[in-house]
Length: 246
Image (cartoon, rainbow, N blue to C red; front, side):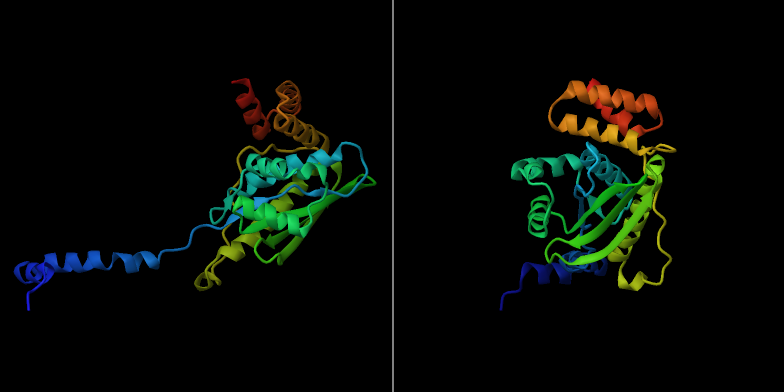
């Protein structure tokens, strides 16, 4: 029987070369054991359940801030708000109001998201309440729900509480079983956050994002300029304004 070239090469080569060849043959097996890719997370616009004029737009500012915070979590990949808006425009969801489970599933699949962050908020008697839930896109199963409330002048505290609790959920979802007893990783501080932020300034920031989505750049620049003037350390707003000024 004729010997293969590999066998002949193996007999005439040094043990070191043979070991190298065997190692190369084993590479596909090693690749199969590589860790899975990061799960993708999409933060949807929350439903406004109150009756204060103009408050519905806060959903865009809240979504952008949560995306900014959660993007510091290295085990998940966040969908950008602009991509979410593109899908909403394609499906004409701005005209339909609330996002029901079936629509959320459709949006999640179009965004390639394994998990969705969705929820609602309302304001009553000088209190703002926000509730969020993490949903598995494929099954519609609610993984966990969290919530936070605050006065309008402490909107940043409310948003950061939500972000911290959501971070803990994704930390648990993405931690291998072998590392279950390891202390949870502390979230990295998100870039672009001011020292404080009121609901009214956050709402103005949201109006700027909405104007940008509608291609009304004049209004977007005007609102962002006002936000930066009110809150100079709000780097997310400063960055948006700088991009529009180019």
